[in-house]
Image: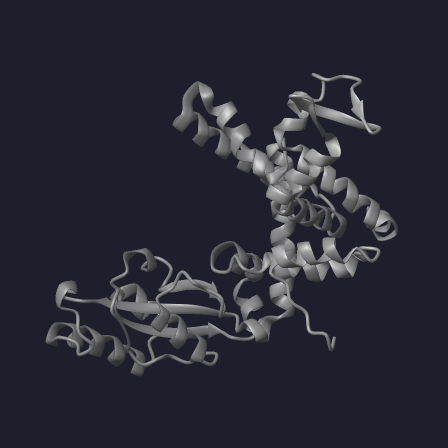
Length: 326
């Protein structure tokens, strides 16, 4: 597959354009209605008051309206397929995911679930749910590899925390109340005495979702947008093993944050059973798939054969910018 794409990429891209555009129904639903009718040697899709619309005209209009998104989606699919082979593990995971998705759709939509699922799947360019889920695994893998390669630039790290909530959220203040201060002092005292951060978190954090795992948040980077801004800023400023001062958050309370890992070596050691970079791109940074796909496309030998319009369309859709000095 990879060798074929390298040698025939431009041809493949032209095919992709027409496949992507033809996913919109008009051509499919009309192609048999004027069978054999042509104008200027081109197939006519439909006619109104002797005004004929050809297949090429229809394709051009659909491309103008929606084709860019379709082309970019299919570009990502083809790059992922060229870069990563489908494994039995991927098939097993996608089969399990499909089962769960169908179960949820059945619960929500009853006997109409198949039609709803088909409709929701159409924008992806796929008709087979398992194939789509396999491709998403590949794209996530490419994004994870990209994250690993750009570890320092992304400021990737694993974080744990302790939260002391406001006594009264309606009267939240940067200056802790006596009760809040007492709780914070109890945490500081145990940390100063050498108790492990995870044990202190398990005992004192007021975020019930973090008690069982010793305050572990997970793996984040500079693009993470799901966190309180003050929390993220403090987390990114820490070196490995460091614990922050108390960080005020107007939304939650007071945080004490620890950087469990800020190096790739430590991060991998702490996550021996699960790829930490897959954890990152599936949980706290969903912005990496586009630049990762573009970087991977160049690796597998993308060649637009001088078609700058197509190249720029895809780069624009992916949000990719490249320095002219490269």
